[in-house]
Length: 252
Ligand SMILES: [Zn+2]
Picture 1 (cartoon, protein in one colour):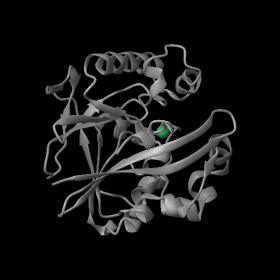
Picture 2: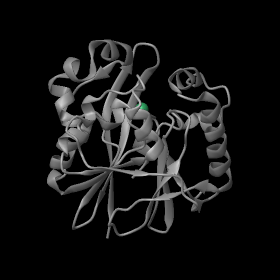
Picture 3: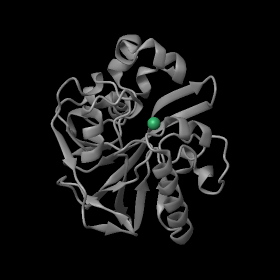
Picture 4: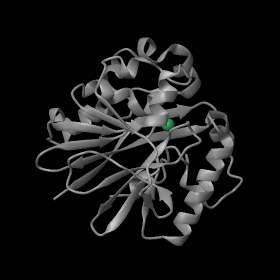
């Protein structure tokens, strides 16, 4: 028996682009907890300028509240954060992995391409979120598929299979995560879109920010078009992203 908890672990009030959240997933079984993306970490809330840098704080508009961090929310649910055995990560931008240091024993699962880009010195990444030298498992290209997407089977000992689904463009190794839950597919798409409205609107104003933040904007748009097609053709797939404040409260 598995339970899903939707946790919002980021509060961004962007001077330029408005409000954004950080929609993480906590998967609970009796034996273990698995976290999909981690949001801003408790350590970040204690020393934001040192860990994130004043320039990025000013640019992005992060707000800090330690009760909103994944570790504090897990405790508030009456669960034990030490039971987090694995963190599945869409990509290594700071707002997705700031919480990793709060779960130092957890294994990290990320695409091969993403970790290579991180190690190459790509300036978009901060080194601090991985400075505790966690165990990192990377996933290279696979021949498996899922609804026409490449699918990389995660090596997590869990009740159901889980897949990293390459959704490249935002970063060079950005992935979504797919798994089956109560007879339907859940598909977390990370930052492949910022707002679900982008699935229906080719000219949404948030596209400007998405383009600015993309490591490969041509590939990002190809990915977005594939998601539009998937959503249209398979309405039973429960698809959601990371930053959309409108999407979050509608899920349970
Ligand atoms: Zn993000």
